[in-house]
Length: 206
Image 1 (tube, rainbow, N blue to C red):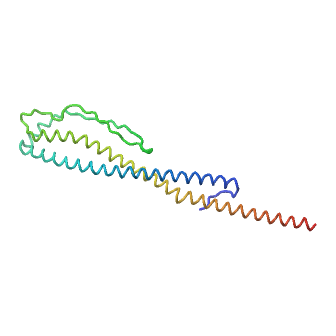
Image 2: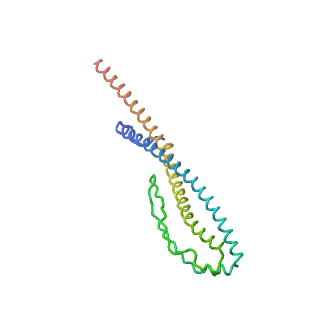
């Protein structure tokens, strides 16, 4: 589509500069999109591995906990866990990667996950809680990784829309406009040349 501009040499020069900037911007955005995609695919593989690790560990912890509950009884387990002594808090900081603000989770932990005496509980219960305590750190790591993948995907989508807008709309429009103005200027030059030649002929006749 031809832009609504005046067919002048100044306008032609201005649009050529815009086209040059648009082409350079398209290349930079394309490179950014490719790098973001590479990082996201790398993160996705890490997330899959971490998720499989967590699912496997959680399955073993759950089996151990169910076994301890079958030995002690549900009421005794609930009583042992009724007064938790471990506290956790999370601060979220950010770091910038390829103009994307990535979350960084900082955990603050206090207390012990085992809040009961060992006399009336089982070893299976102790093991399951200790392993679950370790798993919580991995869960936070997974949450951080998954959030990064989501942010990368959002940024890739935004960048892709900008790349497409430049590639399929702005750059072709500028190119068409340059051709139009060039043709118009050439036509005007031919017309002026024709008039000049006629004037010369008239002058010669007189």
